[in-house]
Length: 397
Length: 137
Image (cartoon, rainbow over all chains, first blue to last red; front, side, top):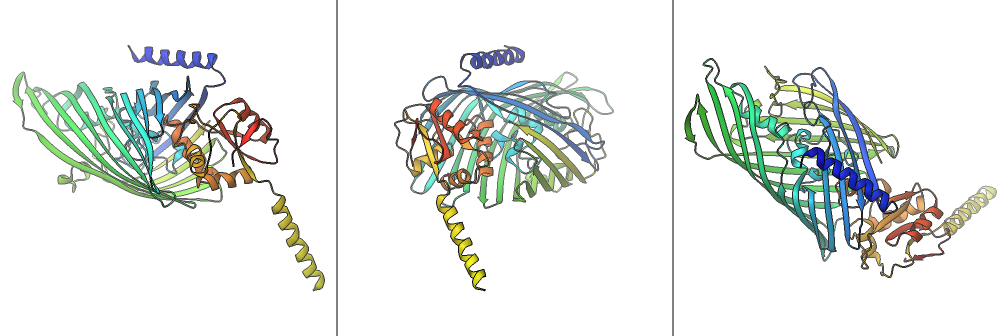
C-alpha cells in the first residue's frame, strides 16, 4: 500500500467517523510557519540567505468506539528546507485499549516515547523556544524519530507519594531515502568522495522504553529512556576524487540511545535538563571499480548530547528562556569543529491569543556537525563560529 | 480620623462579605456516573492519569474559560494554573495520549455538556443551575 493510499484511507476513516459519530469525535490541530537567518552556513534551511521554508501543519482526531477504547490519529505535513516537502503523512494512527490505569495497549502507528520532547516535538505551544536543543531533537529527523509501525504498552502507578509512568514500544521505522537522517548518512559517508548519491537506505525495527518518576515535590519529575535501532542498511555510490573510479560503500549499522531527563515546574519557572548517549556499531563493505574488499571489522563510536534550559513566564502573556546545548558526535574526536555543535539559545515567546503564539530567538553557535551537504547546501569552507535568528508563528485549535 | 477609620472598617467588612458570598467551585459529573470521586482520583482524572471511568466511559474534561473561581479550583485539584493545565493537555492531546479538555465561556453550556456526555467531568461555580448533573465535591 502506498503512502497516498494510506493517507486517503485515513482521511476516509476520519470523515466516516465524523459523519457517524459526530458528537463523539473530537478534532484538534496546529499550523505554524517560521523564518531562519544565519550569519554563515546553511542550517536546516537556506539560512544564510534567510528562509521561510520552515512550516508544519497537523490535524488530529479522537474517537472512543466503545468502553475503555479509543482510536486516535493525526495527519501531519512539514517542510524544513529540503526535507518534508509538505508530503502528507500519518503521524500516528492507532487503536488504544486501556485495561486499567496501570496497563494499556496501543496498536498501529504509535508515537515513540524518548525523553521529554520526542513524542511532542511538533507541539510548538508546549515550549518556549522555536527550536528544540540541537543534536538531541533535530526537526529534519522528525519523520524518522516520531513514530513506529507496531505497538506500545503504557500505564501509570503509585507507590506511596511517588508516581510512575511508563511506555514501551516496538515497531518498524520509516526509512525514507529523502529524509533528514538519510541526508546525514550520505553527508558523513560521502564526505571524502565525489558525486556521492544514496542508492539504498533501509532501516528495520526500533524498540524502546521510557520511565518517568513523578516525585513528591510538586512539578518535579525525572525520566530514563533506552532505545535500540536495528539495523540500518545504507549504500552510497560515488567516485574516487581525482582518479574517477566508481566506488560503492555499503554500511550496516545499529544504534542505541540512552536518555536521562529532568523537568521542574515551579511557579512561573520551568527548568529542564537532558542527557543522551548514542552508541553506533557499524561494518562497511567497499567495492572499487567492481572489486570487493570484503566486510571490514566492526567499528564502534559513542557520542552524546546534553542541554540545560530555564524559562519564565511574565506579564501574563510572555515567556523568556535560555538554553545551553552541546552535541558531540564521537567522544574520541570531540576537538574537531566538524564533530561537534554547541548552542547558546535565547528565546522569547508571546501568547497573542489563546490560539496564536509568536516566538523569536537568537543562537550563538560553534561547530559544524549538524550542517548537511547532500544537496550541496554546505560545500564549504564552513564557519565554525556563527549565529542565527529564528522566528515562528503558530496557530493551534 | 474617626471618619477614616470608619471608612476602612466598612471597606474591610464589605471585602469580607464579598469573599463570603463569592461562588465556590463545584466538580460535577454526568448523573449516570456511579463512580466515587475523592481528592486523589479527581487529580488523576483531571491530569489524564486515568482516562476512563470505572464504568468504562472515556473521561472528558470540561472547564470554564477565564473564570477566576474555576481556575482557582483547577489549581487546587491539579497543582497547575490554567496556562500550565492547557500546556499539559496540549502535550497529551497532540501526541495521542489524551483528549483535549473542552472550554466553555458559559457555565450553563458547561452543565449542558455534562448532562449530555456520560464520561464528562467539569469545574463550574455552584451558583450555576446544577440540576440534572451530580456534584461530587
